[in-house]
Image (cartoon, helix red, strand yellow):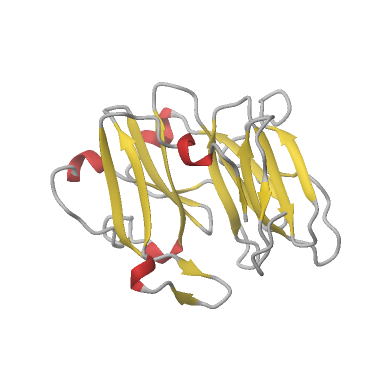
Length: 214
C-alpha cells in the first residue's frame, strides 16, 4: 500500500455539504469474500453544484451517479442505480469539479496506464461506458483524477518503484478507444500492486503485508 500526507485532502476541496455513500461492501480479491459489516467501504466528499461523481469498475466501466436526484433522500447503490452493474465490481468512486479539466488515470496489473480527459460527453451520459478493456487476469489496480503538475508513483510486487511526471507533455491523454501505454517493462511474474499520485516533495510510505513501514 502506498500513501502520502496530502492524499486525504486531494478529493475534499468542496465546502458546502457532505455526501456519504454507504451500503457498499468492497470485494477482497485475495480471499474472494466480502469485508464484514463493521468494515463497510464508504466514500465521503464535500460537494457543490459543480460536483461530478462517478464509479469505476475493475473491468474499466464508468457509471455516472446522479447525486442531485437523490440529495434529500437515503438510497442504496444497487445494480438498478448503477446501470445493471454489480456494485461489488466497483474499485473506486471519483469526484471532481466540472469547471476545470480533469483527467481520469487508470493503472492495470500489467503496468498498462491510460490517461483520459473526462470531457462533457462523458459527464452528460446516463449510461455506463467503457474507458479501458482489460482481461480477467489483468484487473485495474487503482485509478485517480489528475490535475497535472503531479507525480505518479508505481510499486511492483518485487519492491521496485517507478516515478513519472503526469503533465501532458510527459504523458499525453488518449481517447476512450486507445488501449493505453505500458510505462515500463516488467520482469517475469512481476506485477503492479499499487500506485498513487503525489507532489514532488511529498514523503511516500510503503507498508508490507506484515506491517513493516519502509
